[in-house]
Length: 141
Image (cartoon, rainbow, N blue to C red):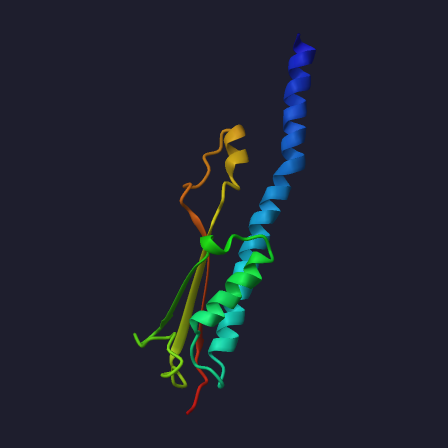
């Protein structure tokens, strides 16, 4: 009986050690992809050619992130400027020196459910991965 118990416990720990890094890597990759997308949007939007991030740019970003397996409806984009001006208006781009801010979030989608098996309390089920960035606009009319 002791040997069966030891085997079950050993098998459980071995499975946990084998699969734990996999879902942690999914989390790390998703965070990196979100941050990369924020940086890309800021690079394009704050360039001397644009000075804004349009809704079309956001939609293209959703499609790029969908290629990484993310659900487009789960992505929440927040685009703002540091002085309160509208940062999504292509007719009134942000002038040079104005900060363009992008916040992108995506739900965890139950990535931490495995933690329940070992007694670790997972984050709130409504929690989200977040990536943010700010860049000064380079647009000069």
